[in-house]
Amino acid sequence: MKPDLQFNFYQPTRVIYGCGSVRDLSLEAKRLGVERAVVVTDQILREKTDLVGRVERALGARCAGVYDGVIPDTAVEVIDRGAAFARARGCDGLVSLGGGSSIDTAKGMAIVLTEGGSIRDHQGSQALGRRQMTHLAIPTTAGTGSEVSQYAVVKDHEAHEKMHYADDHIVPDLALLDPELTVGMPPLLTAATGLDALTHAIEAYTAINRNPMADALALAAIRLIARHLEAATTDGKNLAARGGMLIAANLAGMAFNASGVGLVHAMAHVVGARYGVHHGTANAICLPHVMRFNNDELSARYRDVALALGVDVRGLEAEAAGLQAADRVAQLNAHVGLPQRLREVGVPAEELLACAEQSLSDGAIVYNGKFAADQELVLGVYRAAY
Amino acid sequence: MFVFPSDEWARAYKEAINQSPTYKTAGKDWTFGPVALVTKADPAIGIREDVGLWLDLHQGVCRDARLCARAEAEQAPFCITGEYARWKQVMRKQLDPIQGMMQKKLELKGQMTIIVRFVAASKALVEATQSVPTKFLDE
Image 1 (cartoon, rainbow over the protein chains, first blue to last red):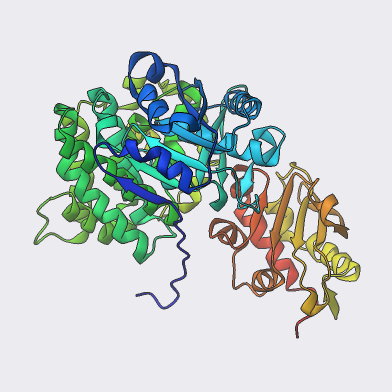
Image 2: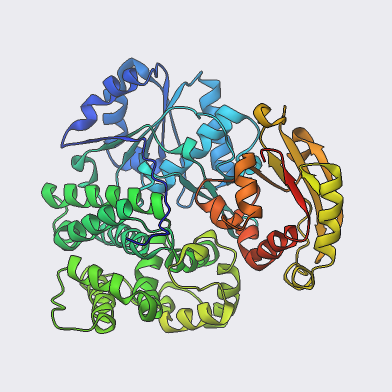
């Protein structure tokens, strides 16, 4: 253990796991003192699936309404409208249902409902100073880990930027993980969100704020993803694989909540904001290239990642083992059918310099385990991923 | 010796910042407005209410440094809040301010995405405190 090791670890979320566990939602809401909950979700889940109906039924008389205005990469207007909707219904708690965007929308709504104003007024880090509105999160994808994290990302569509919020007071009170709610997720979304979770785990394991608590969570997540991602992608009804991925994403969320993420996220946030590239896909494309970039300084860590991924690196020097980990991630991307290059997802070559410049403003870049906050360095990685 | 926090300390700090060639370079692109550093109330050492240090920073120059009330500090585009002991750790270079924000030891109201681009400037601001003879209230 490094003698100068310093960290803090705070994880207040109750996690409930199990097939059919959504049935307990009303009991959990009652336990948390919620009498009038607004469900925060998107129109697709509401109109194309029975998930919203199941949650409404589970909440029973505690359901005060459904706000289905969430869009991918949630935005200021989405959150402010949602808060007005919830306020008009006398809401005293939020139930987010969906992927990271729904959960982040509910985090933003909780802030606006507690503090007033617009979500735009509250950007910051640990600045809220008091408990926010109660939030029960039900992820229907297995990737973001937002159900246990202090972070929310909100897109400013006018500025083509993502705004970042970090606060212990927006960590959801409950994460309800029900594998049955994820069986309808299409294969590509399963793959992309799974790679998002893998990115969280690998970046948390190598971030500058890494620590033994987060390490344990990250490695456990990587092992579960190695075991379950391909099965969950090819057979969406495989509840064991779906459950394994939900737990993995949750563990990875707790890991990065404690240690942060890094350059992969800084790059992915930019191409997501500028060109609408799905966050998990952008992470998946960038991850192996960032691992190769970091490998000279973080090879011992990547060796552990390789082992957790099930790669036989016995007899290899750390640097070679680290490269094997990056190669294995690239193979996994290919096996689950994700794009391999930024050029395949609509990123223009002539914009890479601008992307590199913009990524320097992303908070994640300073957590990267190797110094990366330099335009030329980031441009090199973008070019490698192009 | 100047007591931290006090108007005298703030004036000396302004001079120290403006005499720092490192800050002049590292902060030359800072055009994002004043930064307020708030020390939380600590009656045991004589700080009865939250007190702000208003730093009007612009393009590598400190145009003004003075104490202010918490309410005014919160009007700054960037308001960083911490306990007295935390600011002391910062001034003693035991806590990097940006690391402090990332590790939840200091609270930031404002855009972290702008702050993280000025790591070198923040280090220069910390370095400038070394030129201010400081008396801490708890010593």
